[in-house]
Image 1 (spheres, rainbow, N blue to C red):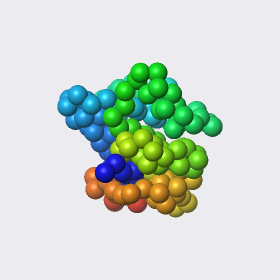
Image 2: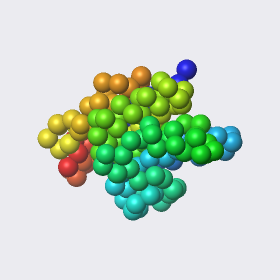
Image 3: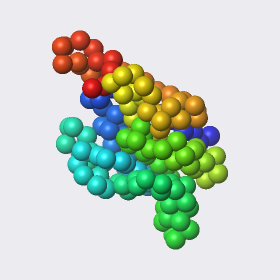
Image 4: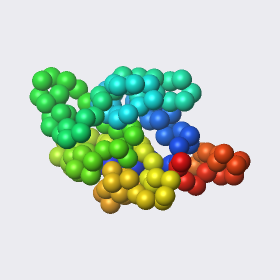
Length: 156
């Protein structure tokens, strides 16, 4: 059964690396993904990790309808077996609703990756909506370190 999964963690805990690993594993099995990102460190239209891995992605714009984009892609003969959304904390709550609709209406798994809270422990709007809608929330276990050397619990 398809699901919306939110992979959450602090900065530097490997969220984008895991997104790229999921993409690699599925593409190696002949599946094709639709990858969305927002404000990636490698620039527009890229999903990258601090380990140096990079792949092409669709840069999400303010107000863009992700469900309509995917339906248009599929209706024009494109293929998508799953969806990855990196930097999902920067998506609008309505765009998270659209990703949930992809799961429910199109039957595709959606893997969203993002930071849950800002440095003040305030939920990002996109992350809040993901926590509300996700079928599963996975907190990544790779510990990022604070500047002081302790385990990172907040983002600065």
